[in-house]
Length: 294
Image (cartoon, rainbow, N blue to C red):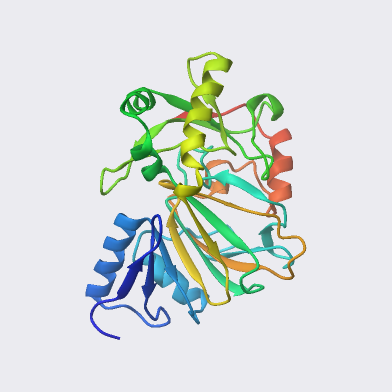
């Protein structure tokens, strides 16, 4: 492999990179990878044959990899595997841990067992959506904060009134800026954003409908159809992701490595279960409501 990686842009955002991640990258390649990630936010690698250690090493080039409570630095997202998370239901548009004070920074999924071409993960860009707003909408959005709530239901929209009063939540600005490039992006999602803070319900719904119309327009979405050996890495805060139902497609197992400061268990130790169902059930058993503001 040469000193530079070969890549081409995806439409309407992201890039597809030719590189062998089963071996360490040179210092120059690591710098190029970080540059591409900061500018394109979504990286796709096809035809990889990588171990968990290889995937962790690739993510280490981009940030600090999260170690889970079981001591591993990876987990599985699977519709059949016993230790897989999230099950087979559809998952609506969201950023992981948006309801917390410290949303995950970046995610990666590696396809270990998938029905080639039959399932997908979709991505929407909060940065491109912000650019597509009118100047009036941008000015309006820049002054707003939103209440983001625990994702008790993965497939739909979670609202505070439908959750346990003990479920965690956080208030974030509707417009945030990329920590390196400073590029502004919308940080409100269908799954976890309950409402705009400080306005009535009707006005809040109107504002969010305007933002969601732009965020989830087909011109602002990249759909990645999975094949075995694919690795996709994305910025979990500037981008949102979603998937369809995967109950009847055969085994779909993806290996997940995360860049984050803290895990769900670190921030909310009352969530003691390991499965998604256990974590959702724990909202009814947890302590007083925690709403954090960032």
